[in-house]
Length: 219
Picture 1: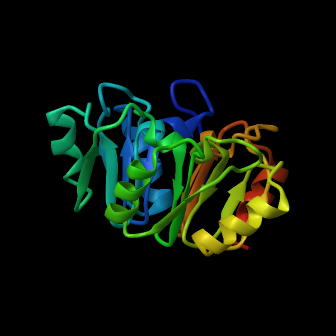
Picture 2: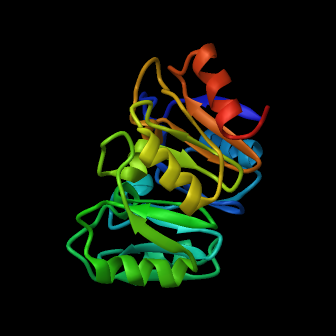
């Protein structure tokens, strides 16, 4: 089941939500939004900030193995995350927005080209996937340039053949190119999904939704 959604008046829903196959984090306390996520994606949702910020989509990287956050996360936030994630890992890094610099599914991942190798190794080991450095559409913040599930992926429309090939090889899914929210090429800011469903920002057009559904393997 698909839904169009805005959060706090903005269609940039990917900044406020982090989702995996069975779990999701929502950065704002909104019962109706929580219910939409639960219904559309068939996940258990926890409402919490991360490091005091509502922008949990930008701050966390996660797959079915667990969720990774910066060590600046608060104790009460960790306790909440543990309610829906079997494992939570905190890393010491100058990078707080881990969700921006990693794009992962349960099969593999990409990382910002300038991320420290040691951090990539730690995240890779914890999430039990291989992660390589790369860009999507020339964009280094790969977590915001794409939305990839275990079933498919939508990439920034400027992704070149080499980038597409790398995503297919490492994350092991077929992908498509497109936009959300009436032409936004930062796909990850306006689209959250797993293999069971997706939610797009409310400004996403009917044509864009068709591309999203095909790219994510729903048609």
